[in-house]
Length: 111
Image 1 (cartoon, rainbow, N blue to C red):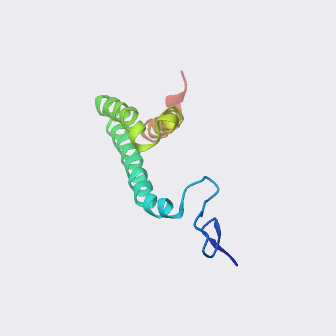
Image 2: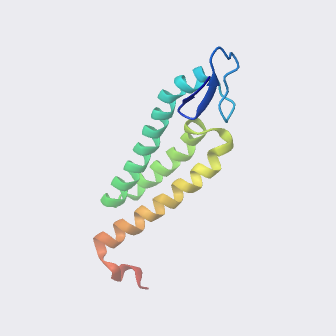
Image 3: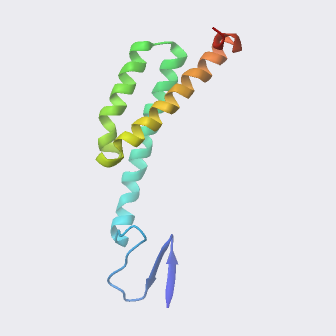
């Protein structure tokens, strides 16, 4: 008899329970707290980018971006650091554009 548990398929008594990514069931349960902490860390970094952009604090923005690049190997794996950093930079640029538009109007985009 098979059961579906959050994307996991297993048979009763099967000691070799594997998910599609190869993690064991215990690792998946224990990894949820780590995933939540990683999400909170990235969220705080993005929140500080928004705060620095609104306050027009260039030094705080620089420190936040530098901190993000230094923390990404811890928050995501070493292999995903470049991808996460590039996505973070794109979101940061989007935040800067939106905050600039909100503070200065659409005329601020014209040269």
